[in-house]
Image (cartoon, rainbow, N blue to C red; front, top):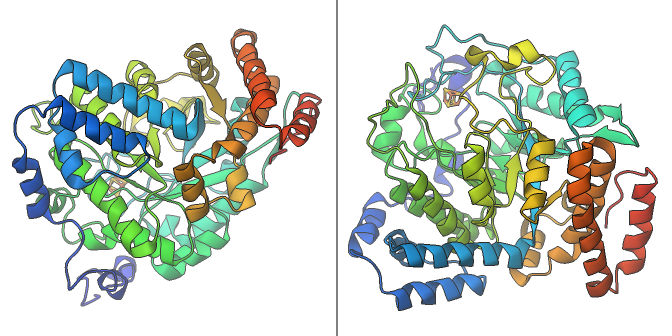
Length: 498
Ligand code: SF4
């Protein structure tokens, strides 16, 4: 038994108390429940339009909002002002990220878990769940489908907290994922960037994972509300340690991982509190580590059989509140990537595109081994939740094209050193698009040539042609090299980027 953590065996070695306390301020963490509640209570009634518009103007100047300003936006219920907020959120997204949406696929490598979260079907007490962890051959089979048939270039690899998914497994699986190259119609398919959604690790383990080459490292706090956190995560589990999880991202940055992703499982507690806390989290990272969160995720919990989250759970988030959450995140942290996953229905995700989100998954399979095995893909006992949006990547791309958005498969930033503070500074200054638009067009053309159905190609090609014309008009410095790459891509060369 580890005396400091009260945990036995493998679990007892996981938590390093000194890698929590070193970041704390006189023994206090950065989520001050009383302060957040007080700020939420300080403002009542509908805010004055002039006050809201002043906040929106600050967002449009690409400045972070304060917690007080976020609390004011939370109070907006007037339909006209909500529409102004939505339009500003979208305008801000276009200003910073242009009309690009980045796509990825979730890739579950195992569903063993030592934790016992009250809301999760994978929890260790659930003996009905069929448990699996993918070996090297199984990973290869999955990547052959993801990169060779669907055409994904980015993954979020999801690992459970279990000795079978420990740091050595993470590193080996990353190497396997990157090693798979598949022949496609006109070129070669491969996964070029793996983001990792994994349990909290020590700084030592995170350094090893970073050396294996990851994109963004994600750990979601689930709920920032300490009392709710304690109810949902039993004390005698690793996840029961709130602060070990809370400081995951501080440790990741100290280990040299430039891009970190935070998130909350909305609906466990009052969404207003979680939203304020996400803003606190990114502010705390910026203050201590010099840079805020690279991405923010905001999955919604749904009621499930054998879960504490029943249909009458008091904190379930309505569609209207969910939309407000998305707008406010975009406005509060203008330069941060926002991910809305296929947990949500297609209608909500289409609306989310008009509220400033930047990343979506598609053709998603969340059963372990579900990409290469259609039978497994249907098995509910092998997946953590039920998908709301089952559109294929081709269908999503077609829908986005109809809305005027191009799909980016760009992974250049990670291979050119445009990560961490460098990419954040480019985003803040509005010059990130200089590279990203060009790479988005190159990678979108690649995907269309290799994977698109005729219908999608017919809809999307004119959009690319328009983008190329715009690049010709606006990017004289990089035009020659871009056109050289673009013509080579059309002839079948792959993975050219600026
Ligand atoms: Fe394990 Fe994650 Fe499920 Fe908790 S939410 S039981 S940590 S898989």
